[in-house]
Length: 466
Image (cartoon, rainbow, N blue to C red; front, side, top):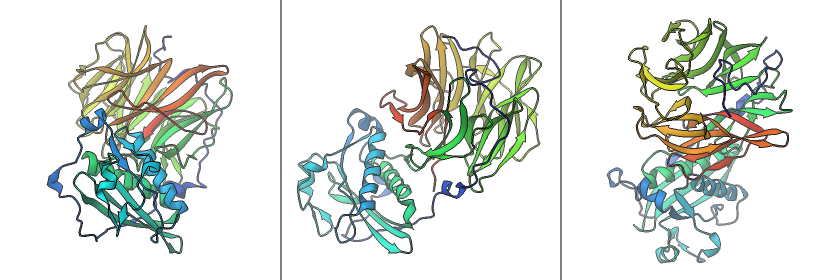
């Protein structure tokens, strides 16, 4: 299977009818509820000293996931709590998702292993636990919850984190993700990625005329919300790194236009349509400008403009097809794909368009580059005689390695800490093909499906919410 290189992305999707429609009704649900955190004192235990370093290095956790015990969160009296049980499950799922932790089976827990709020160390040690998470949930009235948790190091026999959060009751899932991020930070020594969202394209209906809607969800597939109704085909959403905003492409009158969707107000506005076709908007790291590809006279140039409109600068000419631009995290460089050397390859240039340098030299064609927020890797799609692959390489093109392969795999997007990639995978089916979102670690392990209510493509991972 060989994908043609054209300015209309993913030719398998036909253009739908006119009329872009807003998803304003539930816009307020997109915002993380405000939460107030405070230190949890007591038990004579203090948070770990900053210079102490994490108990486990990432490389070590990848070889042998950290055994961690997570008893059910209860109410402050120790009685069962439905929300407490839900919070516990989300924390388990988060830590299991990253592949760096292994939850110990609660059936093996020794009874009465917390005495006067402090772990009975030997009871957890015999289970092989290196860490323990305890917590409780209190109804504060007026739709408010107080969620308190503590992270204990079993090997060091001390508390390393204690925090309480006060939030609205509907935000319990956000608090669970926040706790998971704190545990990840303390145990691994890097920020987590669990309290984040993913924008994507929902695909439903017959393969000959699919309905493609802009949608957003929690990183794990929960709290799914459709932002457009599909009367105009949506493509390639991208999160603004500094604001609650999405850029995406929508087809109206068979013309691709770039729009911004404000996640706070639920409104969208037209950025513009330039030349014969405009595709692939990507934000600058400060969120104030957009890169995109504009076609004209058989070629396509990379263009920079203010996100508010105007200030257009052409960074390449129209002598070849230049598409899929993406800034480096520091904003000094841009990676993109171009056929200037005869077929699709990856190139890096300075942010002003100077110093263009080719970085891909393997077999096949390269497309859809995405720069890691860590700055150390560029993810890409490759296709050739062996089919489609998702891979990563260093920004200079060295260290290239394939993470996953398939009938069709495309659209890589990094999580906020750069340790996990989400992409979409198509597989043949009786009705045509299925399209699913998938995550995988940058080491090529721990590939997992992400649950969505319909077929899905074009994921874009948000920064951490807060």
